[in-house]
Length: 236
Ligand SMILES: *[C@@H]1O[C@H](CO)[C@@H](O)[C@H](O)[C@H]1NC(C)=O
Ligand SMILES: *[C@@H]1O[C@H](CO)[C@@H](O)[C@H](O)[C@H]1NC(C)=O
Ligand SMILES: [Cu+2]
Image (cartoon, rainbow, N blue to C red; front, side, top):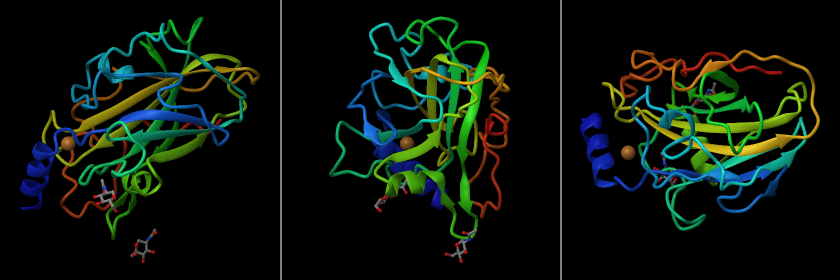
């Protein structure tokens, strides 16, 4: 019954999807759509093998996009909304439950010219099922935090230009594949000083599989634990 209701809600609210619209650096708002690769609309990606998984639709280049200079150790906040506004609407629409993750990938040259293909992505942040008894998800916290979630750029990352990839995975229709909805946003940054770490890296697309228990999953069956796709967070 719950599944049927959620399916209906999803169809009825087809444009209740969302996009990543702002990046904050050390609590300073960089401005709407600034330093971000902007997709044509707020639809999710559902094919885990599609290149749209990297930085959303039309996201393989950022030649028209600026690059923010940040220092290693900076706190980055990503902010998501359904439509073109910060107020008057829930950042995340009802039923869109699931994990929130962030990856980073070092560009061989400029972030603007980087397509993010290959084993280049390191996971910096992951938040999933926070409380099994209340079924509270990371998306619930983003929703009540005005669409925002924050993470730290590890100081040990080498200086250079990078793509930051935010991912919110909505699992309300993920019982069969394709169903899980990937909301993806990429930001371009230049880390001005840094360390010499060589963190573990995965491919997006590539590493995620339709059969991953974090991608094809029924979240309406009193789920007790959840493992997000993409492996462990690298903490620097
Ligand atoms: C976001 O919060 C609003 C208001 O509390 C709620 O109606 C909506 O269902 C929430 N979204 C999700 C995905 O839980
Ligand atoms: C989960 O929520 C319940 C009910 O609100 C609360 O008693 C419990 O402490 C929470 N558990 C965690 C791990 O936060
Ligand atoms: Cu939906």
